[in-house]
Image 1 (tube, one colour):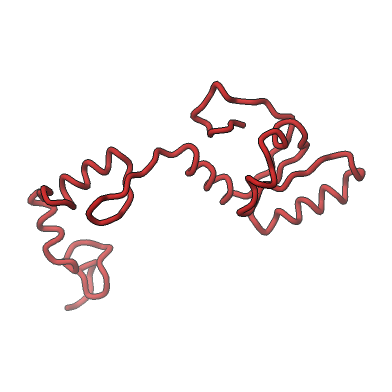
Image 2 (cartoon, one colour):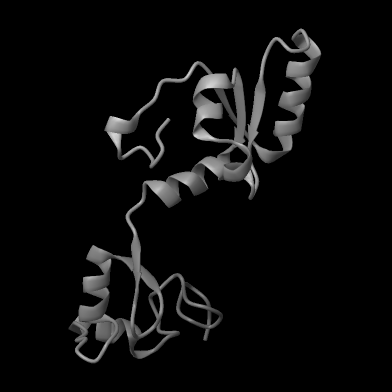
Length: 147
C-alpha cells in the first residue's frame, strides 16, 4: 500500500490485512459472513468504499490496524486511475482531455489552428456517415444493407 499510488516504490508499507475485492452487491454479504463465522472482536473489518472512503479510512488504518479490508472493483479502478495513470491535459480548442503524448498528435492532426489531416484522415472525415466504417450510425455503410 502506498500513499501516492503504485508508482512510488520508496513509500511502500507492509500490511497484515487481507484485501477482499468484490462486486458492490457482495460487500455487505462479506461483512455479514465475517461477523457470522468469527468471534466478535477477533477481526477488525474496514470498508473502503464510497465517496467518503478517504475521510473515513486512513493509510495507517489500512496498514496497521485492519485485519480485513473490504472494497469493490470500481473503487480500486478509480483509485488506480486517480493515483497511477498519467495526468491528462485539456485541449485548448475542444476541451477534451488527453495524455501529453496523445495531445501532441491531437493538435497536429485533429484540432487547433495548425492541424493538418493526412489524406486518409481527410477521406475518413469527409462524410460522417461514409461507407466502410462499421461504427457508423443508421444509414452509414457499416455493412451489407441496402441503400
